[in-house]
Amino acid sequence: MKKINSISIFCGAHTGNNPNYETAARIFTKEIANKKINVVFGGGNVGLMNVISNVALEGGVKVTGILLKSLSELELVNPNISERILTETLLDRKDEFMKRSDAFVVLPGGVGSMDELFEILANNQLGMINKPLGILNTDGYYDDLLSWFAKALDEGFVSKKNFNEIIISDDPIQLVDKILSHELPTEGGWKDRLGL
Image (tube, rainbow, N blue to C red):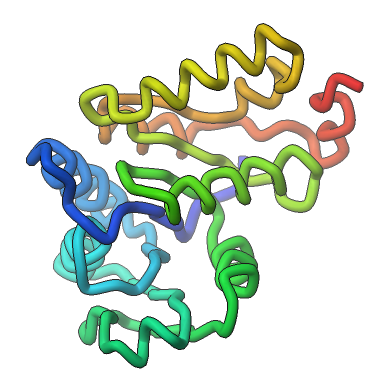
C-alpha cells in the first residue's frame, strides 16, 4: 500500500446553501491535517476552497494551490498558502493535480469539481494514474450522480470494477480512513477493469 503524503481536495468556490457542507469539509480537512497529510487544492480564497485551505494551514501542513493564471490576476487566491502554481489552461491545471497528489477527494462543488472528478476517474480507468479517488457525499449531495452511475452500470457503459474503485462515504472521518486503507488495483489491471 502506497503511503499517502498529499491529497487533492476538489470542492466549490461557494459554500453552498447547506451549512453541513462547510462543517463536513472542515472535519475532513482537519482529520487529514492531523495525520500530517498535505493538501493540494484549487488555490481560491472563496467558498469551500477557502475553508479547507485555512483549516489545513491551521493544522500545520503544506497547502499547495493550483490555479489558472487568469484567476490569479483577479486576486482570487488565498494569500497564506505554502505554494502557488499558476497554469495557463485547465488541462495543465489538472495535470499538475495528478502529478502532485497521492489521492483525490471530491467534496460538494459545481461544474469544476465534476470536471476534476471525471478527469481523475478517466485517468485511473485508462491506467494513466493509479491513485485513490473518494467522494464525500454530505447530506446526499451526490445521490443523483450516484444514480447516474447506477444507470450507467445497468446499461453496460461503466464496468463494476471501475465503479468499485470510487471510495464513497457520507462521513468525513470514515472517508479518510477508507482512502488511507484502500488497496489499489495492480498497475496493469486497468485493462481488465475496462470490461472489454
